[in-house]
Image (cartoon, rainbow, N blue to C red; front, top):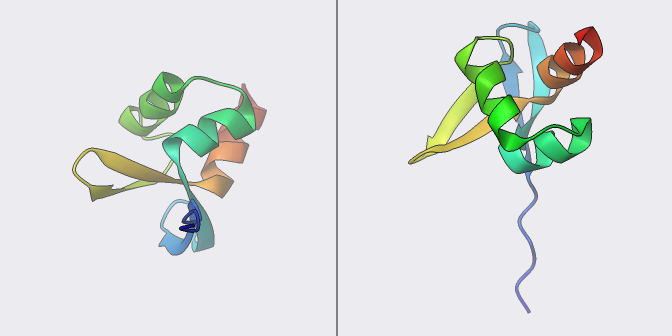
Length: 72
């Protein structure tokens, strides 16, 4: 049985100015109890750092995500 690939990656976030975990949009949405569309809105508005990885797939900075969710 194939193992599930982790949805977390480490990368430098220029907004947080440190090494951070990157999360899949769906995982990020579940963690902060919002819709995936809300996560994409955060990305579009520059509120959270994101990296486009394949096609239309994004990963988002976990620290930016939690900072944004705490500010609302």
